[in-house]
Image (cartoon, rainbow, N blue to C red; front, side, top):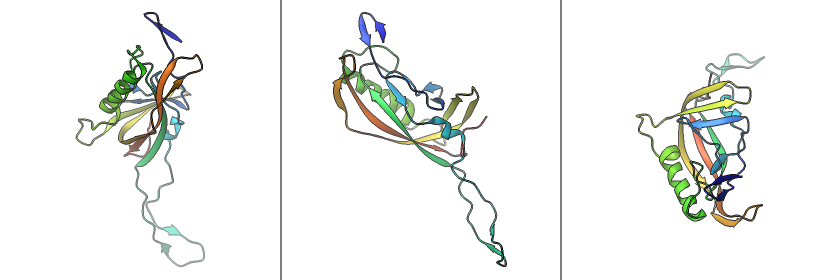
Amino acid sequence: MEEDGGCALMGIQVVKCGGEFFIDNLSMHRAAFCVTSDVEALTQHKSPHRSAGLVIPEVTGELARRMRPAAAEHQLNMVIVGDVLWDGTAPANPDEGFEENMDWLEANVWGVPSSTDSTREGKVITDGGSTRTNPIQVFDMQRESKIKGRDHNGTMTVGCLATLYVRIPRGKLEI
């Protein structure tokens, strides 16, 4: 628990499953919100790719197969709360904090970026310490209903579960 001017900040326990995920050099693992999915999946292709036909033993010729697209789409689960702001400070109240965190996420993560191809820089620093990057597109964010309640310390908070939809045009984040 952090202290900020006499106010106890609880937030959420930051989890870094498979490493730390960044969008435009902004960590997605904070006390105000955190990606809970295994982000190491972003560093690997989702399926094998073929550029030629498939040879079948004992059959003359090849079975035509379409090449799978190089791009990969991922769904990243996350938690968003309102008792701590995106910058680690305390809000006036959890409801206002939740709204400010959602506005910040829209402006910096899932809102339309200014790049011509609608990409942002994606980066994962793996548990092993390697840094993998590539342009990504955040094309949607769906959230569950906002709920109010007390955390394990009795602090009133507001939060929700959400899913961030990410597309990697080149298929994966690479070294």
